[in-house]
Length: 463
Image (tube, rainbow, N blue to C red; front, side):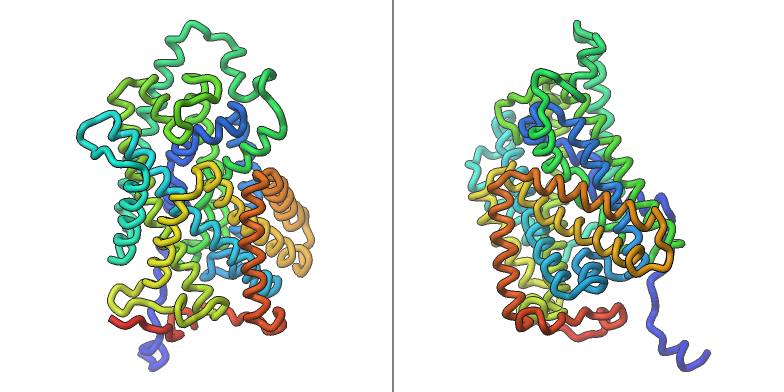
């Protein structure tokens, strides 16, 4: 064996085929994705939830193509922050990363709010769950997510697969009970079955556009497939196909879930929009289905919440490692658990504070504010790389990124004014800090190369 071969670093194993990647993407998004925010979607779109899910899917399919293609160009990066920074300009990459930080921080806030409302709903229906006020549940779940991450707990592929299978069973049970309830109703006319798509009495483009801006939440997480490029067979083909197929399967499954819910319970009036799906589950399948759906969504959201907190910590770590934000704090790792402990604690504190003051519907829109900016950035990066600078100026290199950008921009413009105001204030703060940090963006941020990411020393936190 040569000296070079003996001293070579072990690489990642390419073991993931196309359907393994698709399963991973569906696990990330969760097969029950539209159930938790169903009531908020319904209120915003005046009942046209199926329509908003499908419109959001169109935008995501074009964006999925851009993500898949950029993953081919930067197979170990896997983030909008890096794609935009390396392809366009480090300053634009920094702003994209700053927007994505907003998205990643809002995700655990959203999870804390939903878990707290779910726990309160269960406590009102059974004696086995403590009767605690909302702030107490917020503290409990924010601390729970933080402790899980501080211990370095990360779900294995087998655990995620079991969770996805369990949630899939819940979806089947819900759809089966829903079909029984729908078919037993007196009104089986074609108009009733078409009304969830279009109700002339309540339809308006403004409401549907606002609902679509919220329904984007259904697809958040599909971009995580791009992080597996170095472990996938034929990544130039399979990463792109898996990303598109994940969005398509998610859209079809989500549409079926909300369509059934709308047929069971027409209209958009609920006692509490945050727990609307539980009212529908009780109506369709009685207490048994109510408890099953409640418990399943609570478990799913706990997994999503602490996973999102870890993701936020990792994004902050990546920006800290590049010194885009203070490296000493954000780029530090715990010597025992090898996680960015400072970032986990910071995000946990923000989740606790945010859940106390932000409404559930506003948290959805704030999350989507950052995600949509990241998606638009990836579409522009793909357009520049493959059409502007590419040798083959084909329709495939031209249309998908521009259509993806246009769809995401339209949906972003449909966000509520307060969400845009808060999000733009966050961007303005980041812009001012970035300008100060880089001398008016005259000094470029140095992105760590793939080989450097594993070898560059990071500050180590004291024990």
